[in-house]
Image 1: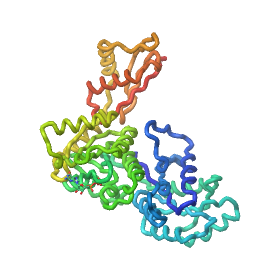
Image 2: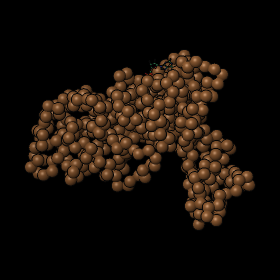
Image 3: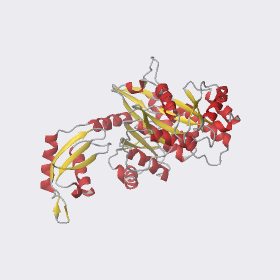
Image 4: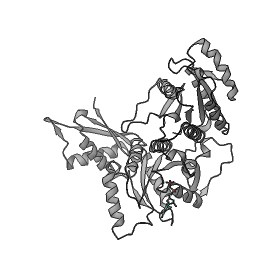
Length: 435
Ligand code: GDP
């Protein structure tokens, strides 16, 4: 699941988003785009010769009221922190600019591979000019034309060669989870406490790049990995300045997790931004736990928990499967329950139900509630089988998939939830016509 991250950095107008779109479109086998909230166009999955990676266009992030200097610093900071490989994009027509040099200086601070690409090298003459760019100190520049598509293959070859090799060899036994939420809800406080109170696994071997930003720890014999810990724990986080980047960052973390802990702040209630973050988590099909932090703050009556829960259920109707946990990173209340719950949700995601059991359930439910009738035609459900896990996905064979109305799907999902523990994980139902 863990994909390496490649970031594009460069001064304005060198063609970063054109290159971004070019690379995305190189995907020959286009993976089906997930439905739901539109994916942020500055963050997408790309593939070259069977190697998948996440691509970020750091320049596509709008920085309200910031000057070029600040913007460039932010871009470099994001790339240095997030990426496994950095593409430093320049423009042949500009020659080497002061800004290029400023960016180069910032990038010298990273040990990560930096690939220097010179864009707008549309013709042979321009391709001769790329040698000036040696002076930036990142080795041989690669001439590309993002508009015409030339040189992109060479660039991609170089990217693929520079990707860390061992990302896929993650410990299979380990459960990855991320802690997401808008700024100041207490993500860092929660992570710091979790990490402080559990046995953090120190990896002596030469780690992957991602190891540096993830924190593995062990509790009650289960190994966990908190995704993107460095980003969460760092203060004065540049990427939280704008909501757009904050959401994008959360998306990256979500993609690398089995289970997502969505943190809300009990003292401020639910805000619009909480809903955006929640929407991404839901669309990604990961397990979700809603963590209400700062539970030490509100004045409480015997109903406070229930009341807050009701508000959450009303605001996040689509997350009706997510368990809710009230915690305080300050007092430590209930924090130990986070790993426990993550483990349970992860177990539920992996759960497989035998077809025989599923079909007994179908038979029972069909006795309870008749299948719907649409335009005089009744839905007939013949057989149900689980085709995959994470999220649990069920194929239902029917007489006519058109008759499988959303509400009946919903009904089947509820039946599954009532009979098996699928808390924390979304469930998918696919209707197929019986042959
Ligand atoms: P982040 O931006 O989501 O990582 O949030 P931080 O962890 O930096 O916390 C933001 C502020 O909330 C800090 O001042 C914390 O001390 C405070 N805070 C975090 N958790 C709690 C909590 O459970 N109770 C109280 N009272 N304050 C908290």
